[in-house]
Length: 72
Image (cartoon, rainbow, N blue to C red; front, side, top):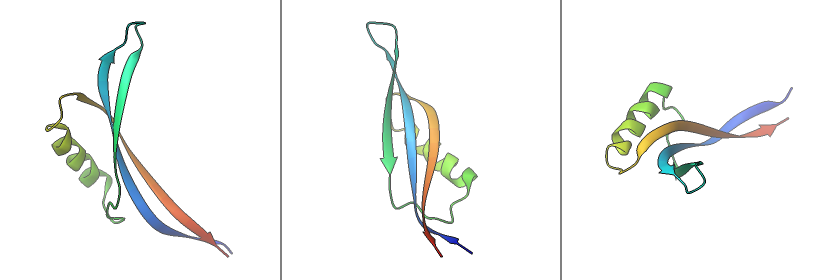
């Protein structure tokens, strides 16, 4: 039976950068690596909110990306 071993977690913050000349929404993102694998969703969201207060653009979305190695 195969197993997945969690190798790493990244936190991605997506910010609203306004509207371009054609009326399309501009999104900017910042990715933070080396996030603790044990971090809960609530902890990550609180961290994202704290970081977003230091930025000029408003927070649009928060994403968590986990990478795993699959072994047999």
